[in-house]
Picture 1 (cartoon, rainbow, N blue to C red):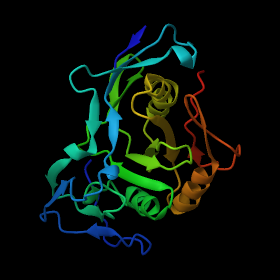
Picture 2 (cartoon, rainbow, N blue to C red):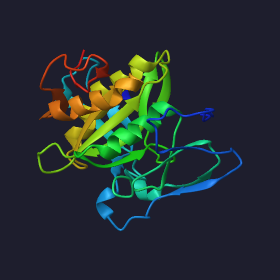
Picture 3 (cartoon, one colour):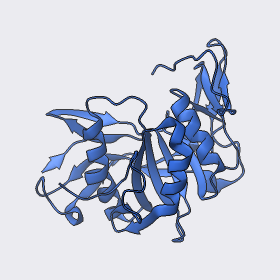
Length: 248
């Protein structure tokens, strides 16, 4: 069986802890672009998956394969280059992010930028905006595309960096579970089986004011299996939906 594949809010006054966020008049445009840093290690590559090849809906993870776009199989953060007048922006740390600005959908995403930039195990991160990173999934019989919020390169002590796909769940939609299922059960195991673009995992964050503590615990608890990551301490983070890749 083959499975094919916002507007930005303006806040009157940002919370004090979001010291890096910039609330500016909508008419003020900035150019979001990559390549401002000489550190090429900040660049993030990702597979452009268009479908999954599986034998049966309940197939073991070992038989799931991600099918890449035949024309552009690999995307890169080097391709980000656009102009925006969105009002909520995060000025990034050039030692942590390959682009100069993160355009945020709200304080949830801005807080994640702050947390990622100060954590010692984060090598690089990028917002999935004008990046071309899409995850195919189905809502019933309707084919859709899901755009996770961030890709984070994490030093988990195993040599090559772990690619952690992160979604910030400020407001859940009716298809939130289908998106997560596509990531955990198809995209992550399918991409890891390719063994071409490193190791990949998935996590969701659902609590704004506990995000830093939850991210710290997540980084401390990461351990690797063949198809993603599992938490070393079960139940340590009730508000983080881990990227386990168990079918069913």
